[in-house]
Image 1 (cartoon, rainbow, N blue to C red):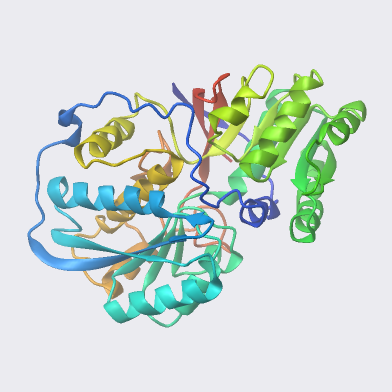
Image 2: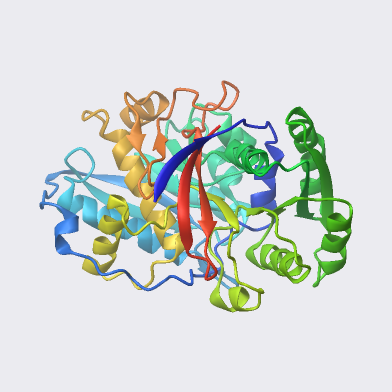
Length: 411
């Protein structure tokens, strides 16, 4: 299922900003239509290797659980990864890991309070799956000497820092969509985005030059959040000659645009950053999600060895659900341990930060199906030292939203 493709990379960093601004990284509890747990084998856990060294605390930030917000899925995935590591992987370089979770409540003050608590409690690092309050949490750790590893972020301060470490390649979305366009001989593409200044302005100013450099015309289609049916806007783009759509926004927004495009008979490439769609949304799309490309860092390939281990961990430690956010929590913690494990002496905040600032070797990203990461070596660009990956996964979805193919894109 895994293969490699290469292509040019645009510089449209604003595409990433849209993800957080439009809520695509917020935890809504949506689960994949392919949620059924695959049969797991206890052998996939490996040989027991119990941690016996002195305990170390690792902070894990989520949105917590308050009215309208539920970030517990990432916490469950993170805790399962810690339990597994303590029982089978020797913990963190032999140390027993104690996971300290804290919820932001969806507010900057809540995020700040969490970081203050983490620093006071002596955590060796702060890990985050996704959070709309990541900037406040990161800022509050300034001067603490504590590293900050996050799965997904749009924050330029984190990506541009030597104490922030990002497990996704935000620039990869730009490069991958242009690579798809090139493969399909697309001459005119369209980016559909929610019409808010913080999204449309940067996309316009930074995406258009990337498209022009690739020799592809670009239509930017901003759609008001109040528009429930985007059919008219999609029809206008098709009439203007759009041969590919990139759709950025929340799951519901992306599904509505895909539905409109398919109802209008559009057969060109449809690209998005959303990797999981609830079954009820999929059911309303003619032909489902057949052929849609999802740009992600999270593989769904059941044959991936990390996926087999994850399934066994979910069974072994009684994780209630295993949707994308649970997997993100697991992926983040496991990647952190692989990174820190490149220096077996790392055991406190100072030494952990030093390792993350210059990892000694390239590591496989957990659940990445071929993606590799190495923090502290300018994997993407010197002005974005915090990004640890230079690749993304391009998943081609089947009718039910389950990937039928995954390719590593190296821009």
